[in-house]
Length: 115
Image (cartoon, rainbow, N blue to C red; front, side, top):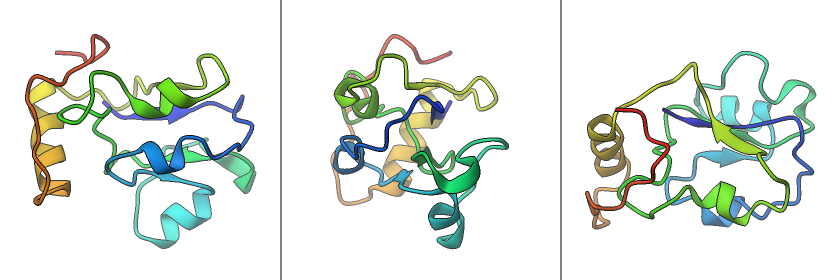
């Protein structure tokens, strides 16, 4: 499942360089202009950062926890999006497809992944 950024976002930018899949954008319109899907109701008014569902792997294969949530100074700002559930297997395949030149470690999975 993809993660989403809640409207508690303070647009500090801490998450941007941490995403191994470049799934985080400063505005909804920026993400959509680059052909990415953004969930309904997210990033409305272009005032908060957004995570695109088609690029988010919840850091599976890269880290033991989602890096956006790990570095965010706002508690519970980067959360699992219940509208986009994906299994570990799907997230690992997506990570491999998005990062063909990187080593994807199947042991790097966080406890919040739905299987």
